[in-house]
Structures are given as structure tokens and as C-alpha cells.
Image (tube, rainbow, N blue to C red; front, side, top):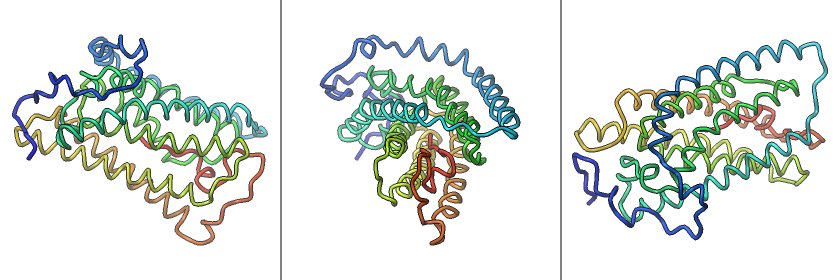
Length: 299
């Protein structure tokens, strides 16, 4: 039976909270979460400036490109996918072991309700910070869609801006369910960008893999809703769980809307036999059904 104290659990002081990483980089070892948290608490609203610039570039760019031929950008897009795949894989390898370690040694409750992933373990703490910051350069995904004159769906740009705002806002609070959000996002992005990179490099990829990736995104949203609600109910019961009522409600709205949009996308893309047929390969980097919908990504 897991302990569920009314104050912050002793896991914070446990010498066994961190997994045994085979190697720790100096920049990870020197990471100080307090400084980053204070910065984000003071500057998280700057995310709205990034969103404003993003929307201006995206929709202004579409107007600019309306009477112009699309750019191919294959080499640049290939490099972009490789870089994001590499970043996501490293992020997964540096955060997922921490969550699995805590789950094995302290139980599910602690993985959802204790923020030791960022306040105790410096490796996962550093990559949590990188996760939040990376939501700005990831906006570049949409630039490729605009310049290549691909179909820009609502889910794509809504997902980008909402993830950026929520990630910056919640980092300032060090909400504990974010341990799950971050690990899932890194893991799904590892698969997704590796898929894009493989396609761009000319490798033959199984046709069903795109559907599996989209399915994993839907599962991610379900888990996101569950851990957020779990944390919220624990906090309401007077059990320690580092998430406020307001943040929990925002998280549920965000993940709930993602679930509806991704499920709708999945049904529209793979719901009929005609949609399940993968287009023939060509020099374009994104030619499968999931790619035709232009890089819809998860948090």
C-alpha cells in the first residue's frame, strides 16, 4: 500500500530517488532548478509574444505564398527532422529512466504527485527545462508547411501554441504530473521525427507505422487526462500533490481537446479503406496520410 502523506513525501530527501545514470554531463550536473523556475515564473507570459509572432508569420506567410510556387526544401527538412529526432531520443533516454526508477521504488502515486524529477534529479531536471524551451524552436515545423504550401490544419497550429503556453506556465509551478507529460512527449516525438527522417532519407517504412504513431498520440492524451485528474483528486483530498486546481483544469481542457482532435484526425485519415492507402513515394519528404496532414504533434 503506497503512502499518501498530507505534506511533501520524504522521497525528496531520499538518496535513492535518482536512477544510476551511466554518465552525467557537466551541464546536467550543474543544473540548478531554482534559477530556471524563478526565471519562468517571471517570464512565462512571454510565450504569448512568441505565439503572436508565430501566428503573424504563419498566416502572413500563407498570404505571401498564395501566388507563388512552393519551395521543396527537402535537404533542410531532412536535417530538421534528424535534429528533432535526435533531441527527442536523447530527451527520452534522460527522463524516462527517472520515471521508471521512481515508479519501481516508490509507486505510481509518487510519479504523479512528487516533483523530484525536476527538484532532485538534475539530469531529468535539465531535460525538463530543455523540454519547455524547445517548444519555441519547434514552432519552425509550421514554417515548412507554409513554404511548401501544404495543408495547414487547425490541430497543427492549435497544438503548437497551446503546448508552448501551458509548458511555460506549468514549468513555473513545477507541477508533478508533468513528469508523465514530458516522458510521453519525448517518446512519441522520438518515433514521429525518426519516421519523418527515415522517409526523407529514402528508407522504406512500413505503411502501418504512421497509423501506430497517431494511435500512440491518442493514447498519450488519454494518459495525460488520467494523471492530471488523478493528481487533482489527490490534492482535493488533502493528499500532497504538486498541482493547483487551476492548472489541473487547464491541463484537462488541453489534453481533452487534443484527444477529440487527434481522434477525429485518426478517423478521417484511417477510417475508410480509401484513406488507408498510402500514396506512392516521391521526392517529397511527407507523403503518407499522416504526413499529408502536416506534422500534427503531441505535448
